[in-house]
Image (cartoon, rainbow, N blue to C red; front, side):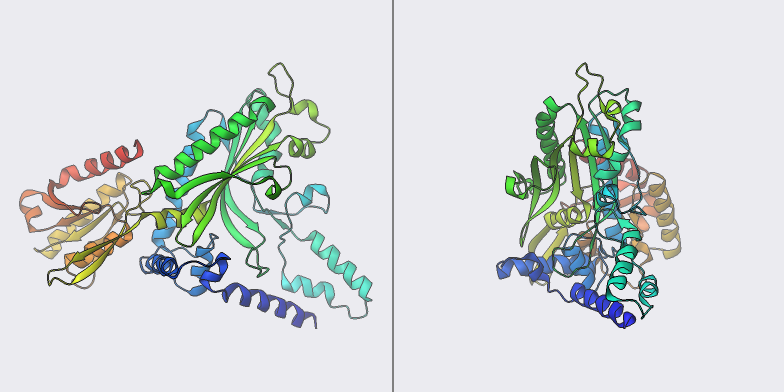
Length: 455
């Protein structure tokens, strides 16, 4: 009976998680053209190895939760996380990074409840607790309750970890305000699709501690800074916007909250939440240690807490959606074709340059390609070894493939390279081809990426 119960619950959860239709998860009716555009987006991301194939996996990605990423998606995700971290830790002084576990064993007290409700359950352990068939219903219920209370808790956000580490880091800055604690990691939240399966997301968090009298100004500052960051990497900055959350939708200690949205083809979705949380959570976390929480600014005030919580998985989807451009053009036979270009920002593009091979002595050309690839790796420039293609492919088809992968440049090594050292360089954004000496390529790419960073 117990085995049947556990299996049936597991199967129901798995079935509901995997059987949801893509457009139903939005909870709204979207125009058919927008839905078609959304499907085109998702199919392209599968075809070009940003995410792994499979309806369930595509559905997870579309909902803005962790899915199985392909090699390009993994690299893009790391680039987004890196740029988020740079923007937070580099924009203000006194921001410290921490790392906390995604689950922990806690007792069933108020401290444990702050970590949220999703728990780690092993079916075998659950069955072991229920195998005594002579127990009454009340005793059985008690056993189940105690088992659930002992099960490790998953974290639902990164705020609690920052609050826990507040006191030692406050001493580190000589108890002067403001300062911040940043962290990125996986969190688990109750699914909003009704499946009952918790959603796993990659969160990026800054918890900012400031004086009560400046908290409102700091919240406005961080909203402007975060919106500017999202727009920096976009082709259409107006698709990113911010708005205050209505008072009736605020939860827990939040007195004011501002969400940053992206306008997807199917509608707006939140990417980041900036909130003012007061000092209640800090006082509750460090009960009996009020003197250690007081700042040395002459007022001995308890710091107010601001939090920035970003969903990196949905942010990745937003950048991909925003960067896709469709261009109609005629081919050599005057047939109308659609050119798809993933114009990812140079700092986010998972591949900066693809190395192709032209006509000439194959062995010698490959040696030049391998040498160039190694040079680019040493310069920390990600390169795609297109010269390893097993079947001959027209360069026009390869260019289309690289455009859909978001590759910034394509360099072709040919017989001319062996004679003069010259290579052909094609730009993704302009499609213009120019000639450059192979010795200048690495410096050119470094300067190009650096210039994009300063824009």
